Image (cartoon, rainbow, N blue to C red; front, side, top):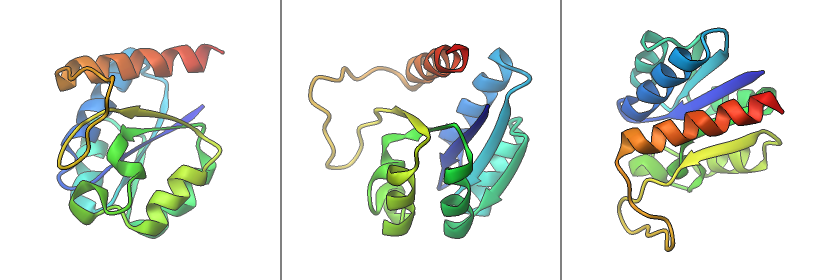
Length: 136
């Protein structure tokens, strides 16, 4: 199984996701896909198997993974302060890969019925969900 972790800006959320996935599943193939080189580098240093940056790399690779993880913003046009282009959001949404996303609520987005919990708890739940999907 191949998992893509997608992040932008400084890659902080993606870095923490990669660290936790690597800790729980050391053999997992993790592809770090950053909207920029800074985000990709942070995820690769955290333990991703390999990484690629930019719109083209993201759009190309989301069709070649089994699971996509990141924050909900990766599927929103102009999410991550504008780093998610319409092309990226469309490619991720249209990918046949399972999407396991963190319900991070920032800006003018409010997810009703989703309790706000600390990021480490959300990442822990994400890792558990990925583990369960890999066992199917």
